Length: 530
Image (tube, rainbow, N blue to C red):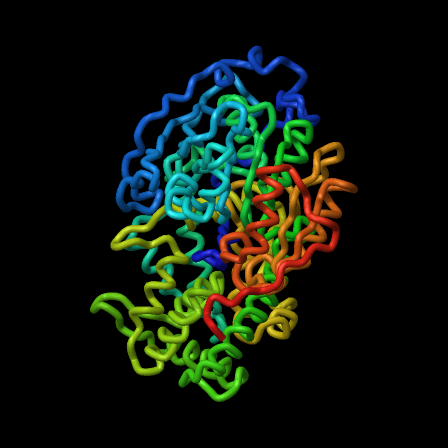
């Protein structure tokens, strides 16, 4: 979340495990929100550090590149800092790693300021340092009472980012068929490619690879809370950020402040179940797009079924004969689906998706390749570490490992859930099989008895985190903790859609502490005019 099947699709390795994955449980901080019972100032050197805030440089290539963030309209400058955290939270006085932070200060005086509002924008693998300035306009109203703060989670971007392959090798892998449906040769080619990928990750990132899981990131957030000077963690998590927020609430229920989880991950599903649910969510979103496309008079078909058939035909054609783009690049069937998935995450991207598909039908692939690049973390000739970090974090967290036989048995269910995306989703569920780090559990533990109310926002048209996940997160958090808000809308998440009702409810909760009434619903406000 934001979701795509892993570029590697599987990380199968034969032979010996390349890297030990044992993470010692002994010596960890307490699970009761107290951090182990000791006063924070007595818990070691990292708790006594000061954050040296200074003007932000341009994002690094691992963060996605680009220009240094511009000051906000009122002149507020973005500030960046580096926090030291234990590499292994089981050895808090041992080796450390760097965690990159960014903030925009609130202009509120001491009586109006609530504290810092920490953001995680999802992935896993998204650079918060690069993303927050790009989306700051959406959250400007919240800066009236909060410093806006985000970070690169461990293993991401400038926080000791996981790296695996160089740009040329990543491009080769992105162009590979992620759905080996033409015989054993394609299967073997995929397995060989993913073997190289996993081996490269172990070789290039051995130091951090066992220590980038969500529980470690949640402990980092509690350290941030302390160093930012807050008694409570005020938090806004989107997509995977909702899982991170739930894990934080489980570990530190007494440290939870005002928290919003938007685009809620279902914490009860294993990887294969999650992939199946996502296939269904993507299919629903695509059907909504197709119906909209027909209403606007697009050339792809006269009905939603015809639009779907046209896209499936384009994918099959590109599997057989990739479309040359920009001379030395090609648009494959798998990259076409990546582009569609990317566009379905945001309703306002539907017109670009329509144009891109029509162009591919006419033999032009630039628009769709650009959309696929955005999903894969490519900018210009380089890649961020978004995909590498996503795979590493997921596989640190998840213990389930699947075989090709497992997936072949499940393939009919995926096909039934989504004729368009079922194949790519079922093969993507192999991403952690053979990964060189043993995963923690089948699904995250988010039980948080004693935590204050947490606002959960579920979107009925969400392609990446289906709506049902919000209710299951609320059930897992515990009675009286999860407070639900339903958005009958499109795209991934709700607050960033621009819906005035959602933004009003969320802002009222974060700024004034007022939770919505049970059963509250916000209706869709189309941004496309039809």
